[in-house]
Length: 594
Image (cartoon, rainbow, N blue to C red; front, side, top):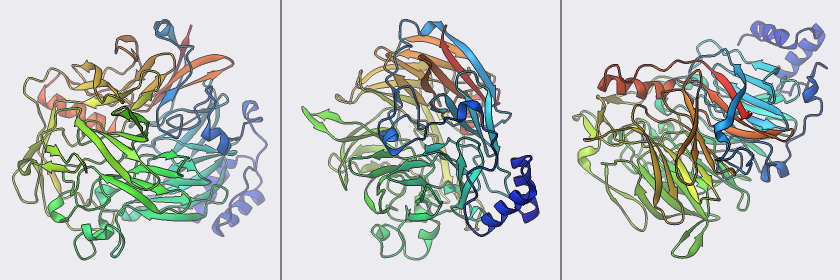
């Protein structure tokens, strides 16, 4: 943004603030000094007594609030609230709706602190709402610089800490806002957008740091997790997911400079273990996408990595698909669940991987250990897994190669489950999975040369296909973590499923994700469909639940588009007219029992 354009933006944002104040802010920002937390007294009444989000509150969030995108550090997507139950969920009624004014896919979970809701949208927008009635408290928009690279224009939400709201702008700028006013406190450039780095994940606040990763695996980035000081925006450490020569794991890459463009993007927020001070992040595929163009296992792509929050040191990893070649990003992190095996407790990590396998891992203060795994959807690539290490034995007839014939594989490149998170209910001991089954893809590799900011996939897709005899595609699955067995499954015959999961103390599972635009409520124990409501668009974002003045609410952020739109279009190619386009447009819907 030019200096003159930046001045116009600040002036518009501050309204009637004096020119002297505006110029002071500009001068401080250009010197790298944080701007004042607020330059206006126009604070909405609900925000005047805004409750700061302390480290202790993040460790043990109150049941009435939803302080982070998955509710708690372990990533369970579980709320103990139980005013809405299996008995009365059928009485849920719409309380309010807020339209965002943006199209494209909306993927941010509504985050709530003492009656104040924060959402994000595509196109660099954050809105603070009264969680009880949907009225706007403030709205922040950040104009994007001309020529911004943003192949997946969405955003997955904010993080709260102290009296600030933290958010990653698409052009790879970390932003801290005053939670009471929506005014910028500081900004920090995270990476160079013109080289293909962009952001759409929510930050993670833990251990006194605000952490973010990067998207851009399709553009030849070198993935990383970076930590910043929440008060100042000063970078504290940066850990790359592709090692440089001489670093641990570098021997899994070819000689030369491929590590500089090796991929391994981190585009979904990690989960955190306060006991060990480790954050667990998922990494995407390599660059280019075809493994024959980067011989070796290519650590740490398609992996879960354990990062020491204090230092950034990489303490452990587990790689799901060595030399990954199917576009199976494993960016979605595992949830932290302790489970039973052979009558003994295991400090666990549970990951429903994009490659079609459900993994039960063991977390320690350093290494991540394999315990067991099994396919949860049709999977044709792995002939077996090593029972000790979990390393797959790959059928070469299913692995695409550069210049070779199209290779068909299941699940498709979208995966058995994409990024939408699972949920875990400690009462039922089950995880709930938004799965896509019976879908296969085809791919081959094409030569590609790296150019900063340009496509670096080196892949060509063939037509999709379905498994013989398939009668449905989308599924909600429930698995018991102690037995490793599937308990129930709900099919969607005419839709894929991109529905992030929420489960509650009321014995319920909530999820959207289907082409019928509905939010669904299931009995968590049995899978019985108890309630559904049609919104304006498909729902990809994680639902959340909270309580204000003693009343429990359910919040849903609708807005179809992006990859769900692409999968829907692929199904319509296979079954013309049976999978029509889904209306788009962002809106928050809030429900309560009436």
